[in-house]
Image 1: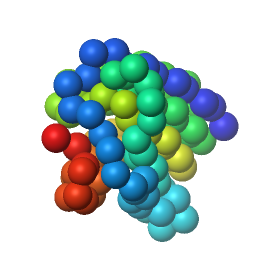
Image 2: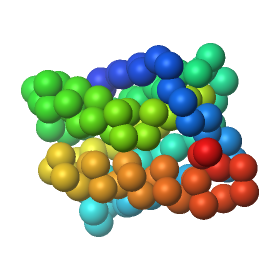
Image 3: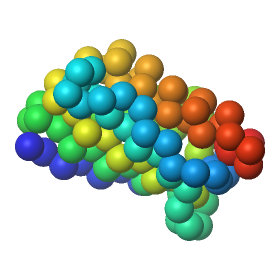
Image 4: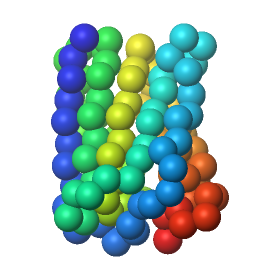
Length: 107
């Protein structure tokens, strides 16, 4: 297992509401937990992956995610067992959309 950590400053969309979990590691090879956190406007992402040695790919996927959503005060936890970058992007979008649909979610 490899753990990768990313922090993006200057987000424009504050995240609030209840934590949301999307995906299931056992069936879809990937689960994502997204939750509000007091991070002074930053978005922190922790990736735990069984696919060791793909840090540059993960960096690109996370940078693209941040460019799309520009989340602030958000913590994202990714548990991966070998999902492709396209599946990771899809699940990240689903996680933000699920929390945004709640009252007080992402603006």
